[in-house]
Length: 370
Image (cartoon, rainbow, N blue to C red; front, side, top):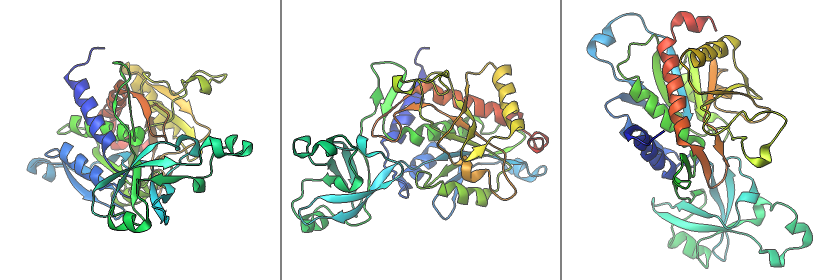
């Protein structure tokens, strides 16, 4: 597959989304990007936790004609895992708590970006006791979070507060580059969980603008997913979807340390991972069969998975009111919940292709059959 204008536009969008600052609970920069990219295509509203809701703009004729269509919502969380400053030490180092599910093995010596109280950015490095000073027991175990700190080059708490304008509650995100992995279709960067999903949602809303489908397609950029699937819950209560498609980034299982007795269910380059089960949701059989038929009939690239761990916004959305038929389309991504992840850029387009085909074939009657 040769790179063309469509591929390049997707790459450029993912780069912008990946590099954006958006720790869980601090997603306003993501609002701005989504509104810019869907300007002229959608109107926007918010729930009270900051989730952004994108509805296609309608002409006067469309506004006045026919009964209301069922709502099919595309949920993609816009937050990224990060940190929050919880303490400023007298010698100028910062203590922090996690915003999302980090493992401490990935953190020492990594760079971070801190947005201070004036909206400016400060670079820091996560530090810990050097191995030369550790006991044998300390070297053999993952460090405890309380043993880590952020070094910004300050020498006192007063300098941190007065000069660097950093205080308790200041948000922090990974500081990472974006690029292609040796000129392949694989790209690396931070926050692919879930900026890849946001990239797909923007593409879907653009491609379906003006389409005469049997559903009203609504895009949702949900907040605080990494802190407990929170924004999806409040957004779903606000829009009351009749069906939901959640796009997220499951951990790829095509790397050497993930070898099992089973074939990989989340392989890069093999299209979206359609999730049949995880501990937070069992997909409705009728909806799964509907998706299977689309994949087969339209010769789409996709893969299916049963997950023994993890969860997505679907865990909140499908329990809204009397229940919402929900399916998860995952864009497999290596090394998520770390500073740098890797994905196949084409899998974003393949996820969008499947969601668009679903929108074209959904109707009130079809949804009621699930």
